Amino acid sequence: MHITDIIIKKRDGGKLNKSEIEYVTKEYTAGNIPDYQISALLMAICLKGMDEEETENLTFAIRDSGETVDLSPIDGVKIDKHSTGGVGDKTTLIVAPLVASLGIKVAKMSGRGLGHTGGTVDKLESIKGFRTSLSKEEFFAAVNSAGLAVSGQSGNLAPADKKLYALRDVTGTVENHSLIVSSIMGKKLASGADGIVLDVKVGSGSFNKTPEDAEKLAKAMVKIGGAAGKKTAALLTDMDVPLGKAIGNALEVKEALEVLHGGGDSTLAELCTELAAVMLHLGDKGSIDECRNMAKDALASGKAFKSFVNMVKAQGGDAECIYNPDLLPTASFVYPVKAEKTGYITVSDAKEYGRASLILGAGRERKEDGVDHAAGIIMEKRRGDKVQAGEVIAYLHTNRENAIAEAARVVLSATEIGDEAPKTAPVVRGLIL
Ligand code: URA
Image 1 (cartoon, protein in one colour):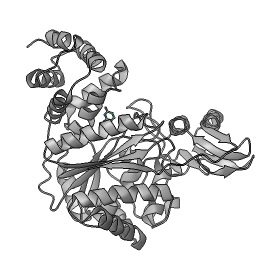
Image 2 (image 1 turned 180 degrees about the vertical axis):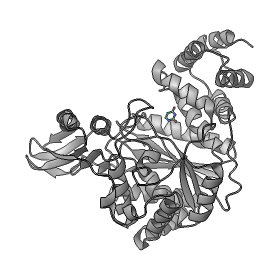
Image 3 (image 1 turned 90 degrees about the vertical axis):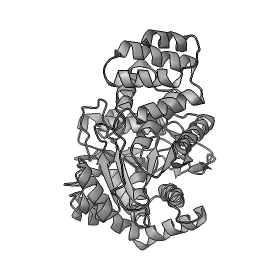
Image 4 (image 1 turned 60 degrees about the horizontal axis):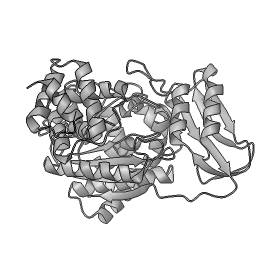
C-alpha cells in the first residue's frame, strides 16, 4: 500500500477502505509516514468528506492505535461523560461526584486542554495537593474507594489522535465532521467505560455554530458508540453564553462547590442534573425522570458534595480547601467592568469571554504553557439580565496587571446591550438516545 495512492484516491473523491484507513493510522502513529503527507490527506478529507463507514473505520483505528483501558478491576457499572468543550464548562466537577454518590463509577481520564481556561485536570489542580498523575493501580484504587477519580490522560491512549489533532490544529483541518467524530469517539472508546454521555455544545463558544451541525455530530457519535457495543447518549446544549457565572480554574471549582451544596447558578445546576440523569439512566438506575429526581435529591441532601470530598481526599488534595473555598488560589487584582448604558443584555458572547479569560492568564495558548489557577472572570450579568449604566457586569481576576485593560475591552465588546429583553432558550436543546 502507498500513502500517495491513498491521498490521490481521496483527493479525487474516492472512498477509503478499512485496510487503507488502518494502514494510514498505524503507520502515521509509528512515525513511518511524514506529517506533510498526512496534512495533504487531512485536507483532502476536509474537501471531499468521508461517509459513515469510513468515519466508523477511522474511529476504530484511532481507538486501536494504542492501549485500550480495561476497567474490569473496578467493580460496578462505569459511565463516562465527554463535553465537546466550551467556556465555563465545569460540569465534570459536579456530575462525576453526583452520579458516583448514586452508585455509578466514574473513571475519568481528562485532558488539560488548550484555550480559554484549563481542562478539568487544571481546574482540579487548583486544589492544593490534588494529584492527577496517577498510576493505573492508584487510579483503580481511587475509583473503588471514592466511587470516582479524575486522572490526566494516559500517555498511550489513542496516540493516533494526539498526533492527528496536533497536525489538524496547524493545518486548518479541525472543522470536519468525520475527523471530529473519530477524534472524540476514538479516545472515548479507548477509555473503557460501559457507557458514554456526550455533551454536544452549540453556539459561539463551541465549534458547532449551528444546531444542525451539533445534531449531526451527536447522532453520528451515538451511532458509533452503539456500534462499538457501548451504551451512548448525547445532550445538545447551549454554548452561546458561558456556562454559569465563573470562567477560570479556581473560580470554577468554587462555583461547582456551590452547586454541590444544592445552590449555585440555576442554568449550571439544570445542565448538570440532566447530564447526571442520562448517565444514571444508562447505568440502569431507572427512567430519565426517576434519575433526574435522584440527582436533584443528591445535590440538595449534600450526598454529591460528600462524594466530591471523598475524591479530593483519595487523590491527595487538601479537603480544607473544599470546606472553605476561600483557601483556593486568589488573584492579586480584581477589576470591575461596568455597563456603558442602561438596557437588557442581548449578547454575552461565549467565545469572546473565553478570549478575555485567556488574556487574564486562565488558559494556555501552547500546550507547554502553564495556567494561572486564580485567573478568570466572574460574570455578574448575562444575556437576558437588565443593567443600569455604571453597574458591574463582570469582575476580572488576574495576577497580570497589564492585561486588565485589554481584557476589559474584550468583555465590553462581547456584551451587547439593547432596549428589549432577548428571547432566552433552555440550556438543554435536545437528547439523542
Ligand atoms: N475535540 C476533540 O477531541 N477532537 C476534535 O476533533 C474536536 C474536539
